[in-house]
Image (cartoon, rainbow, N blue to C red; front, side, top):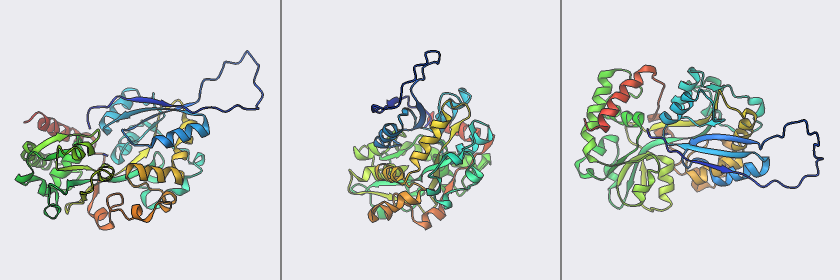
Length: 357
C-alpha cells in the first residue's frame, strides 16, 4: 500500500549468542561458516523493531533490512537484480500477481511454515495468487481519507469527491502512488478501478488535474507526519498511518468514502534469486506467530490476516474501525489488479500531473 522514489535505508539487527556446550569442530579443512542472515526488503516502518530483535535472539539469524516507499521502486530493484540480493520482499496485491507472472518470485514451501494455520482463510486463495503458492499474507488495509477534526467538519466528508471542495484548497495531502490516486480519479469520474480504457483513464487524469492546485503535500514516506504537524488538514492515507496519528491527535478521524476505499494485502514473497531461502521461511514462520501478528497490529495499526493474533487483542482494538474496516466498507472497496502494459497509460498521465501539465 500503498511512492515512486525509493528510500534507501538499511540496518542490521543482530542478537547476542549464548555460550554453548556443543563441541567445537576442529576440522581445519572445512571452510568456516559465515553468520546466518536473512535480507529483507520492505516498506518503511512496517515490522516492529522488537519483533526483529526477538527473531534474531531466538534463531541467531541476523536481519539485514532495507526499505522502499513504493511497489514500483521495489519491483524495479528486484527486476534489475534478476531476483537476487534479497531473501524476502513485501509487495502489495497486484505486484504479487505481476511478479508471479514474470517469474521473479519462487514458490513458498508451506511444509516449513508451522504457523501457517493461523492465517484467516477469508484472506487466502485470491485471484492475484491462487492457493497462495507464491505469497504469505502479512498485513492488509485500506487507503482512505483522514481529517483533522479541529479544522475540518467530519460530517462534510462522505466521499472522495468532497476533496474537490474549494474550502480544502491548500490543506490537502496525497501520497505518491499512481494507482491509488487514479483509483480516486476513476471513481469520482464514475468509472471502475482497474480500467484499461485510455479514455476513462484520461477522464480520471482530468479530474486529478483539477484537484492538483489544492494539494499542499505529497508524502508516502510518513504521511501521518504532515497531519500531526498541522501542515495539512485532510489527506488520503493508509489506515495504519491514520491509526498511528490518532495516538498523537485526539480528533483525527478516518472516513471510508461512499465510492469505496482502496483495499490491499501486503504479503511476504521470496525472490527467485534469494540466497537464504531456508532462513526466509524461518522468518516468515516467526511472523505468522500469534504474538508477532499481535505486535504488528498494535504498533502499526494495520489488520493482520491472523486469527490467532487477533484473538490476543483487547476489545477496543479489535473493534477499531480505522484498523478493521466494517464489512460494508470492505464491500464498497476494490483491490488493484495487475494491468499488464496498460499501466504505462497510467504512468504517462501521472508524469503529466507531476509536471503540472
